[in-house]
Length: 580
Image 1 (cartoon, helix red, strand yellow):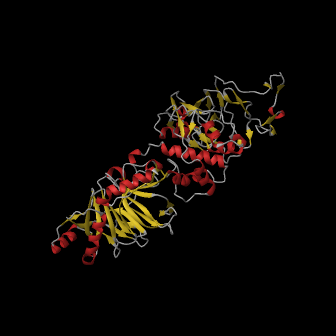
Image 2 (tube, rainbow, N blue to C red):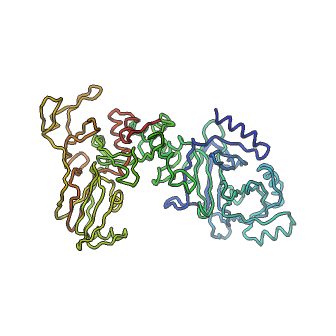
Image 3 (cartoon, rainbow, N blue to C red):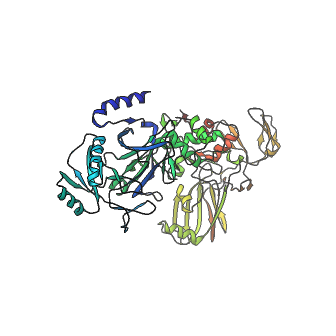
């Protein structure tokens, strides 16, 4: 209700000047970079097309987003297919796409126009006067430049052509060829210009679909359907002169387009809810793309997003059930990192990256072992010469590697590796670089040489034979002779060698992992610290898939299967948090 009142007041305040209408947005929206300069996969574009989806929209509003992410309407069009392009000479290919390369016989869109000197008070006034000039000049259209409205005439491929018409007609006008900020809007597959926008970077052209009924409108872009509006950022700094395409969309609609790229909608509802809260929290606390003028990108660099393409009933329900819920630590929203699986233990943030985050504390994870996880275990072997080459390609000065010594964290994940060559020269690699160096799936791995392994500083291992029950003095040498009783009274016989128990200090390993499990070969990470591996080759064995910081998605799946709630899941993987 509050937003509606604000929008109505803004309407009446602005009506006399531009007929501006502000649509609700603000903190409820997320700005998603779909195509942008510097992206390895979705680079900025020469031209971008939009099309109304079925009967949910008919035509578009032109405008911009203000500092509060409110859409400010300037004008509108009934055209259902639009193309936004750089204001340069363009040629239309047979498939309707645009190119800057001249094509004989093709329709051309020239970047030189005659701009009438008269300034109009609104888009509507400029459009009305442009319509009157079309019969004589063939093409006339409204333009918005630095807060003012103009009429532009013609579409010429050269300045001299524009000058010829200017002299012939004796118009009170100047030649306009746009700037590095100008975006030209045309009817797709035609050279009919509908509108040009240039606010010198203060704002950028935004377009929202005109709804045709009660159903929320959707728009086709690059083969996917999207809710919300689109912004076209163009400048030397933001897009290297091309056009960045940003989807400005309601947060909950965004999440419905994200969640099924992260989890299958067939997964348990509580796992999907945990994922929805994580994805929402992640999006609200991202700053890596601040300089590009959007919150998150649509690739794996942030969270994969393809509009409504993957939306499903179960995942949509999980988003709706957790609407507005985010994760906080000491009253501040957290960085809600997550990954596929940790292989048996998550990790402290500073042991993988750099900053020690108090809510990102590593712990043994008893839940992943309860389910079958695809490609859970892995093994890679490199010859000593290959290890040397990998290090050298990364800029390290080292000869033929003779040995590798490893340092592990308290939860058994890799922390550091020191490589020693045959002359005794050493190179050390730490934290996530250990995983990245050899393209390993997770941080939970061991390294062994083809010859032998020596070392010291052995850690104490949990062992059988010292399991006492209920303080009676009875001792068992195998957990397989025991049963568990769940909170609802379900009795289950233990049939696993890897068992965890709840203690006053948290979750602890009761028994030592065996070499074979339902996931294949699982390494025992209760190993020697600073163990030295030597040989002509080195083998890396591990489990899991991801960086190990934050929530395990497969762990969430397993916890949900055990009847635990999304709040239980999040409170296990993040330390001392609140969900609100």
